[in-house]
Image (cartoon, rainbow, N blue to C red; front, side, top):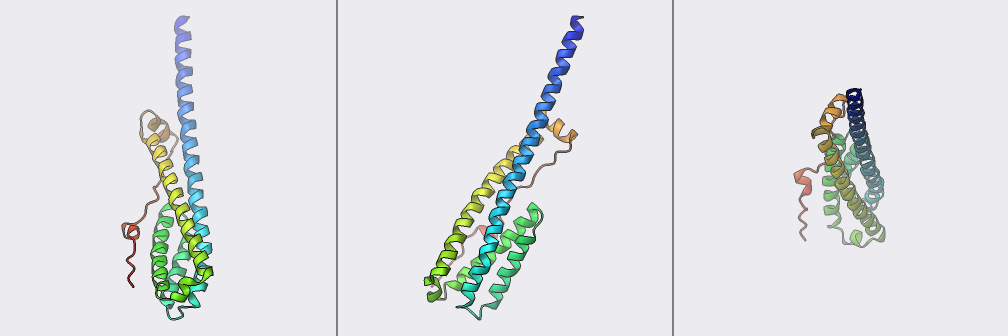
Length: 183
């Protein structure tokens, strides 16, 4: 009789551990999704600021058509991105295009003094800071989730219930470099 009670207690403990591990994996997976949505919000905010910025710069730099087209293409790519990888690539492309746009703006002193341009530039800088913070939070959350998916014994539960590792949101090495501005 005692043997059945001990076996029942062990089974209940194992079930409790499995449920706890499963729930913690679900919790982390949902945190990854939530933190990705925060990045998405900031990327969309940046994409919404860009048309106003372009219009302001266009008024001063009419012959810089190639730069405007590059920024517009990159913005469209950011808006159309569906996966973390696509968002990462389009974000890198947009960052490079914006560097070109601000390099063009450096050639127009009247533009640099324009209040609308300065306000848009400030909003864009604020949004870039929010993106950086959101990206760090997302990557930290992905790290916790991926660790949970790989570490014993939760890796058994993760593989049994098909929890897949999440992708990190990384920046290309070429985009990390600060552009050189010369006068």
